[in-house]
Image (cartoon, rainbow, N blue to C red; front, top):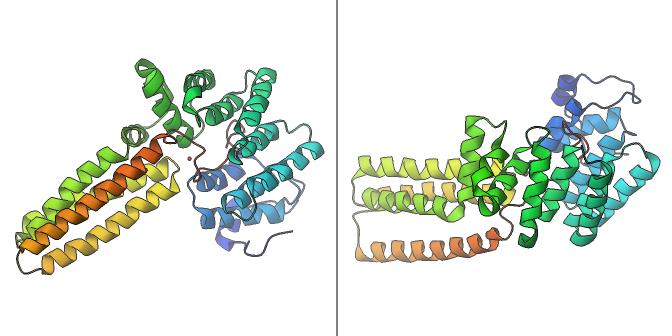
Length: 335
């Protein structure tokens, strides 16, 4: 039975052209868009994609597992409750062995990392040729820096079967490889487009470098606009906004919703600041001091955020990243 709030989007339903037979098997392609939206934290759009599937295939273990994942990510249920739902699906569908990895992954997101790692290691030993399981194990291992070497080894085993199955995994693998095996880091980008490579490499450089570039453009734009040098001010302002837009795109690509929203908010705030500077009558000493104080506070806030981020920067399983599902090309599945 659908929860309140799950409304069927007519356009999405027509686009999918589902059969009216609820017993028809849900294909990997049917779930691809839902999983992509979940990974990137676009929960409203994911709800619109998932609702028709729930109506047409209410008994599908794939659909129900994805629904459990959705509930956990949107805090409708805890990860422990969602894990229990998936465990029940495993009992009812013992042949859907990929659900075991989904359940273990949810266990890790719920805080029980060591038991999840042990369970995923058992699954990997049982199905050593399944790249998806290697990715899931790596996704949990690299939550702790002490496991980074093993995590990269698992990513390499997955890469032996082809490219990693999502930009979230690619971003995480590339970040870890740069730390533990720099000479082979580009292996993580196998199968990526030029835009994907640029985004992943930018993300891996970290928040502080992006912010340093933005801060330089922002300060120059404010001073020039307030000093009535409008042409140059608009140029630097455009560069500052372009930097925030690129950072927002990169973090959306890497499945970090909070990071994406941070940069979008920073861009909006910058636009307001540029307008006020444009309307200012010259540059007073008070204005200069205020700008310096503002930039100092912002740099301190960014530095604090960056230090907190480093511990989880490589993780595909940050609070904003979707747990894997059983529906990606290999049964898989993110400042």
